[in-house]
Image (tube, rainbow over all chains, first blue to last red; front, side, top):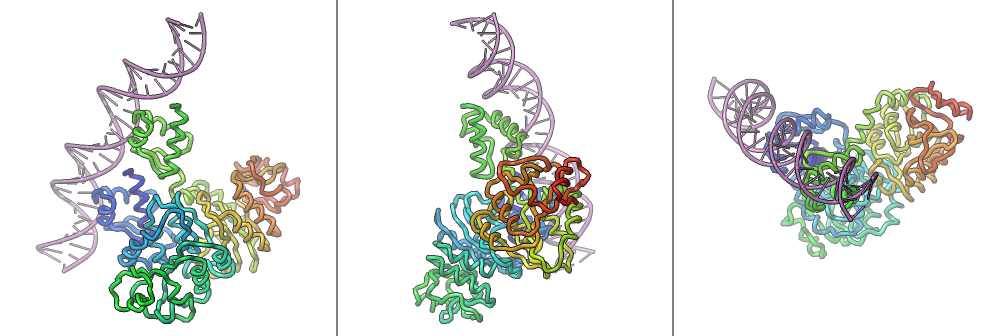
Length: 248
Length: 248
DNA sequence: AACTTTGATGCAAAATATTGAAAAATAAAG
DNA sequence: CTTTATTTTTCAATATTTTGCATCAAAGTT
């Protein structure tokens, strides 16, 4: 592996987690901690990160105050993302919703996978930007800075005109009776159109989001074809099994 | 095998993987590692890739080189950005083109300025995202990762449906006879629509971009209302003065 | 204060680069 | 078709860089 590849990986990890640990990188990249330390030192001199005791933190104002949320649940998110990878096939058109769960998946997509990705999430674009085999279509619209996505007329029109194979939905609330719901009106409408434009919808839901409901409906539970969660033995999942929904 | 064929193969491999190893290429092309090394050195001098220890990496693959470019001319860019600030007024709708010049302006916008900004540039959004008084409209479309902007049908439609007061154009080439031209077809068309949707167009041009021309026309020089440059005493500017264009 | 973790430094082994020269291939000239 | 000159490629010897390890100092923890 080239030194520059390691650099890139370190930066990638940093973009995802906002922080990296020496030993974690050492494991990931199969080199000694000393080497990682030296790499981080060099990247620091280049101004690309800030070296700190035991690792490094992102230096500048990337889309990070947003990505921070990924930290607090990252192990669960990573294991969910891993389960999503087999669902992809070359040549598909895939919709990526906003949210950290889809981000974790985007970060894990294999290099040799050829996809068209349609999204309204700025962080997703940031992660996929350099991927040669992935064609990115971005849905324009009004910036909703809280979630760092676009919403509104243009966004909805964009997805209405699209025909996708798969849609990955970051879930706010999922309930067997009430279906998928969201706390924000504009976002909920965008998500709704995403599911309608897609042959299959995959819901990404951490356990604490199950059996809860928010004001605005995205879609009923029967529109979901697959639920990915971190703990698929959860009792709260049985009603979805009964609906014939695949649970991973 | 011709040397040029090898060059082409190396570039191809690089486009495919973002990186190449000396020994891998040596195997593939059936020549010694030394020869590959010399090839890579030559391609590096031509600016087609970046030679690194053990191989080479694609030149554009670095997500930071966008910010880097901003640095390299930052004094000139900053002084240009400063000149642009008085052109803004509360309540305006302003188009921001891609490129580092517009980025420098976005960075410098006063906190109390109320604007609607329409752009197809991801870096511009990143900078304006946290600004309470700025409403950002993003033009969707196909990701053009080299410039980190969107292009294509959706982008053009978006700007066609817009009526803006001002348009800030990052200039590739500006020539009194040939007008504003760009090296990339898709980008040139987007820029063209931007100028057409805007009451006034401001061209941001560093001196080395004056009196040059590229294949694709954005607009004729008379459509420009203002030129902002770092050195407004430049002799190359007199033809623009004669056209009645304000030069700052 | 004792203990643990992390960082800095020097060193040796391995990998990679550089250099110069010889061999091979190609072009140019007679 | 030779012969000579030029470029390209390989090879070998010699630097240089990178990496991992050992050691010790410095910074955090208990």
